Amino acid sequence: MSSYQKEQAETLNMVYRHLRTISVQERQRLLSQISDYLLFRDTVDAFLGEHFDNICTQKCYQSNLSACCSRESIITFFGDVVVNVLVSNETEINALAMVLKKRNDGFKCIYLGDHGCMWRIKPIICEMFLCDPAKASVFKEKPLTNKLWIELKEREKHYRWPDRPVLFDDLEKYFMAVGYSSPLMYLNNSPGLLRVKELAGKSNQK
Ligand code: SF4
Image: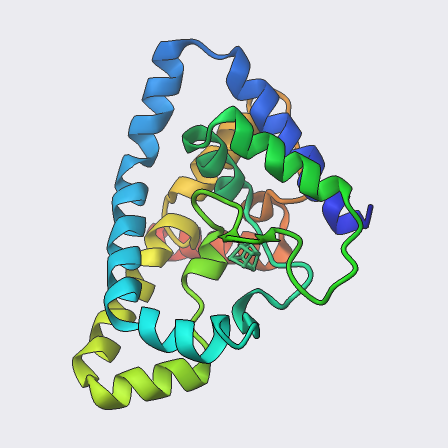
């Protein structure tokens, strides 16, 4: 198991175990906390489905290129894991845990299964990635889609970019408050993102 897989597996296990211990009411509260983000993800899915499905299927999936998923260690935020565990069933979580125990011999993401990504709500970095050829092709043909994509990229920041209070930070802090830590808690341990918070704090004081 690579160090990447170990980090992923430990975080998945930690989140899953903790969420099993909380009350139904607390789970409902967390689901309500992520509901706006899930709506955002539905909007992105609808946009991608309408404008990019054809080109991605033809150029990438049918040719087995799957370029978006060809990187071995895709960044996943702690918040990604929490959201996904909250909305997944036990079978889906077990499948993720199992695949993380396997050796990754290929040049593809460990989570790429026979039917695509194994996450129910895939990591935000993956969701918001469009390769340059796909963007060039679609945006040239339908210029309005470029504007819509920029708006979606801006909205994405409201969940994970800590120059303001954001969901992914809140989810990390929720687990930190009960004693957990994970290398995937980037919003609380990445020097770059801590600096973003610090600068945002200073500009709010002005
Ligand atoms: S996590 Fe899913 S969407 Fe992201 S690279 Fe891996 S298989 Fe692809």
